Image (cartoon, rainbow, N blue to C red; front, side):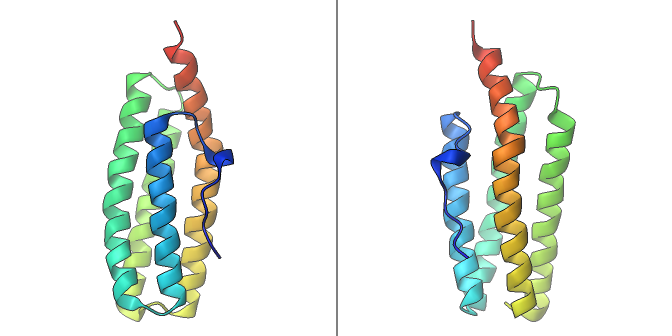
Length: 135
């Protein structure tokens, strides 16, 4: 299952949209490597993903604090959930490699969570920030 960025997922804040697009490219590459059984590439991409989501989530959270976003805590909790899930997937991959059950979980979690989080949670935050920026 390909994970492709579409303009429908744009939140309208360039730096966040660029980071989301990079995240989609990398996750899609990782899912493809997992489906192909390329354990070394999955390991490399999981390492990238752990670092990248920490960087990206920190940037989003700074944005929210800067604009006093009222949904900050709930949004931050979603980020923490995702970071934890990536850690669990990384550990399972370390133990069993890209087993079919893990590939399925990765596909479901990463693709579905990203689309839902960006499409709903990030979009709501971005609408608030854009309104807050208006003079």
